[in-house]
Length: 494
Ligand SMILES: Cc1cc2nc3c(=O)[nH]c(=O)nc-3n(C[C@H](O)[C@H](O)[C@H](O)COP(=O)(O)OP(=O)(O)OC[C@H]3O[C@@H](n4cnc5c(N)ncnc54)[C@H](O)[C@@H]3O)c2cc1C
Image 1 (cartoon, rainbow, N blue to C red):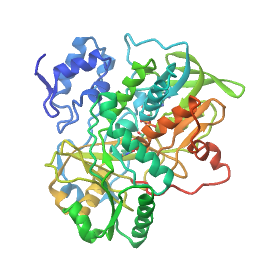
Image 2 (tube, rainbow, N blue to C red):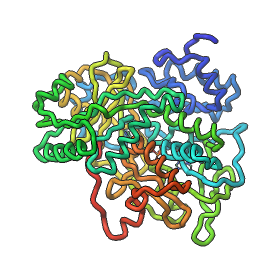
Image 3 (cartoon, helix red, strand yellow):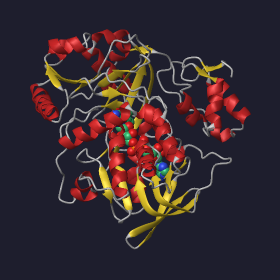
């Protein structure tokens, strides 16, 4: 054991890099996500060369150590300076290098485990949905499961999100699913043996308009009937929860102290590890390129590494689900839409809940390491799998954040990134078979798929192993759009 640091911003040692490599994380992106190196203020400037050198020494190929895209800001910048910029003058798609989509990452060479010729269940997409389902299927004894991931684990939205897990929803179904996920998240570290930085600091929704106040009052009443501890607070009471808020910016707030935030990356390692320990297979850098069909069934999945015959396919490809389903000729109404997010320098602990402002979609929370993590949707975003970062987002977020908490003006942003929401016309997921009787969908989770995955994966695995079918699989089938647009789910953030 040595204590030589590879990354001093994040305290990652060379031994941790070696351990990651020994566990099969050979490429730079996977090692970054497994160890956290390169995610601090210097964004890899001081550690990238050292980690690349170590991986090459250990046997990685040049294709596996291609440097990741540096994101703005080049150096930490205060919210106050960013808030002085006019977002209306800043473009959505210029000025800052656009990161390559995960699927454009060069496939790694070397001794990757072979694909099986056949698998009972093939899951397309190794995000939290696909991996949680694989783990839950394997737990129920269905172990002939193959997860095909086109890039590295955590490449999609599951590795790019804000880690918010809340039970404050507007329908009994969503409240119950989220409450179950909260239970599973709270014991994930014990069940899976991996720290997920679960912190139950609550969620505080700020309502700036009379309409938003009526909305949180209606929802809070429902949530209390469902057994949550949600309370509607006036501005003075909200200041008892977060004293730094500007009380002139909202009329009331909805607070559930039992909501939480987590660090997303280890969830994927936990689920993948559990699935594989029970006999399932997870194959990264294996892109699904098509499906072979026979009558009303999908008979095989084709990939850039070969063909796999199967009984059942589950498409859990997040924002790519529409294009994956289209490979079988199935049209999904999903609209992938970029969602940007940022992290600040670490601050001493001051913020318990995740704060979200209804209407603007602004949200931010404080991680256990002290950084603020926050995002905000942009109504001007076009449809598309776009994952580049913009100065426009930094300016919009900085304005909204400093209006909500003026003291944030001096806090510095150290890094920004982006992922995609997988938006459906009614903000609810698409579940169950579509187009073919064994071609299952597990997509369309907008900006709340991370918090829904643990509970939904349990229910999906129950259904696929004959343990009963929850009514979400009838209500959220693709067929619901045949008769026009169903009502939209409320309380979507971002
Ligand atoms: C910035 C941001 C903030 C968010 N904040 C929150 C939050 O606070 N709380 C919350 O609950 N949710 C949040 N979300 C939403 C949440 O992250 C997603 O709903 C969830 O991660 C979706 O998981 P998934 O497994 O369906 O998709 P993904 O994690 O995107 O995984 C899909 C995978 O499929 C792979 N793939 C694609 N095409 C192919 C192919 N042809 N072959 C093989 N593999 C393929 C991709 O590489 C990818 O890894 C946020 C999202 C973003 C972008």
